[in-house]
Amino acid sequence: MPGKRPINADLPAATEPPAKPKDSPEEKSAPEPGEKPQKPEPAASTPPAPAKRKPIPAALKAIGGLVLVALVFLVAAVLGGGGSNKHEEKPAPAPTQAPAEPAAEEEQTPAAEAADELGYPSFATNNTTRVGGSDPATTAAGVALAVFPSAKVAQRPTAVTLVDEDDWQGAVAASVLMSAPVRAPLLVTADGDLPDPTAQALDTLSPQGSSATDEAQAFVVGSAAAPDDLRTTEIKTNSPAKLAVEIAELRDELFKAAPAHIVIAPEEDSAFAIPAAAWAARSGDPVLFSGREKLPGATANQLRSAAKVPVFILGPSAAISSDVVREVAKIGNPVRRVAAEDPVANAIALARYSSGDFGWNVNDPGHGLVVARSDDPIDAAIAAPLSASGTWGPLLLTDDAATLPKALREYLLDIKPGYTTDPTRAFYNHVWVIGDQEAIDVNQQAEIDQLAELAKIGGEP
Image (cartoon, rainbow, N blue to C red):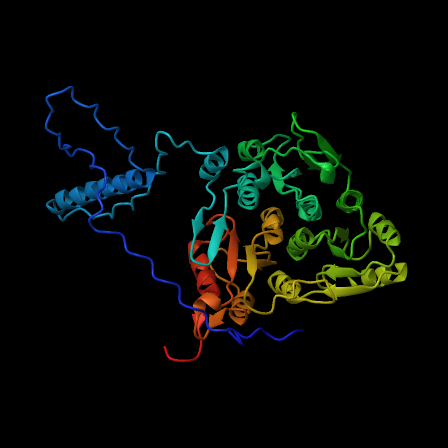
C-alpha cells in the first residue's frame, strides 16, 4: 500500500496573482422599480425616441423577491408583538427562495429546465453535493444530468441504460455500460412504464446512438420498460446470475475486448454487492453474481470462457462462502477476496484496496467520493455514473439517516486533506450525497462536509 502524499511537498512558491480591481462605487445602475426616471429637457426639434429600458436581471428579481418576503415577515412580527401573550407564539416558517425567472430575452435551455424541475442539486455545501429525489427515478435522472448536462450536443450520452426500480442486481451489473467507450448512464422505470422524471431526462439527454453502442439509443435491462421512440437493445432473462452474464457478454461485444478483471458479488445480499457498481462504471470490469453457498451455473460457464482473467470476490464469507472461492479457483481463474464483516466496512475495504491495476487505492487526500444508504441498493447502484466522471471516486455507505457510522468517520478523517502554507496548492476531497433527507439528513451531510474540509496543519495559525 503506497504511503500518503505529503501536502505541498517540494512545490515551488506560486507567484501571487494581481488583485482584481474593485467595482467603482460611482457605477450607475438601472433605476429601481417604482423610481421615477429623470426626463431630459425637450429640444426645439422633434424629441428623440426614449432609450430602451434594460430588463432587470433575473438575479436581481430573485433578490427583490426575498427582500419583499422579508418585509412581510417583519411586518407580521411587529403586528404580532402587540397581541395577547396568552396564546403560545409559533415561529414563522423560514422563507424559501422562489426560482428566479429568466429575463425576457433569455430562455432557459431544456437542460436547465430539467435540472430545476428535478431539483438537482437539491442541497450543496463547500465539499458536498446532494443528488436526492423522493424516488429512484428522480435520483437517477438527477445523477444522469449531473454527469451529462446536455446543454450542448457534446454533453449528451450516446445511449442510456434503463433498469426497473426493483431490480438492484440488474442496475449493479449494468453499471459496467457506463464505462468507456459506451458511457451509458442509468435511468429507472417503474410498473412497466416510464415515470415522468425518466421521460423528462430522456428528452433532455436525447441519446442518438453511435458505433460504440451498435447504434442503440437505450439498453433495456430485465423487466424495465422500453421507450417506444428509441432504438433499443434488450437484455432479458429469468435470473440475476444469467442477466449479469448477458450484460457481461454485451460488454465484451461493445468494448471489443475481454475484461482485465471480473468482480463476483453476492446475489442475495445487496449491501455487500452495491459497491461493485461504482467500480464497474469506473473500470469496465463486469460484475457477475454468486449465491451464498454455490456458484450459479451461468456464472461458472462465463468464468470458463475467461479462465485466465483474475477474479475478485466482494464480500465476507457470510455473503459468499469459501466453497465458492474454491469453485472459482478450480475453474482456473486467479481469485482473491475483498471484504469486511459489515457493509460499511466492506465498502471502505474496496475503496482502500489495490492489487496491480485493480482497486481504487483511495488512501490519501484528493479524491471524489460517493455516499449512499446501505439499505437502499437501487439508489446506490444508479449513482455509479458519478464514480466514472468528474471527481471519480468509490461508493461508501452509511447505515443510518442521522448518524455517520464510526468506521466511515474514521476513514474520512484518515483521508482528510490539509495544507501547510498555500491552500490553493493543496489536494481536495468532494463528496456526492445520494438520497433525500429521509435517507441521509442534512446534519449528517454537514458532518461529511466538515470531514472533507481542507484543514491547515502545522505552522502558525
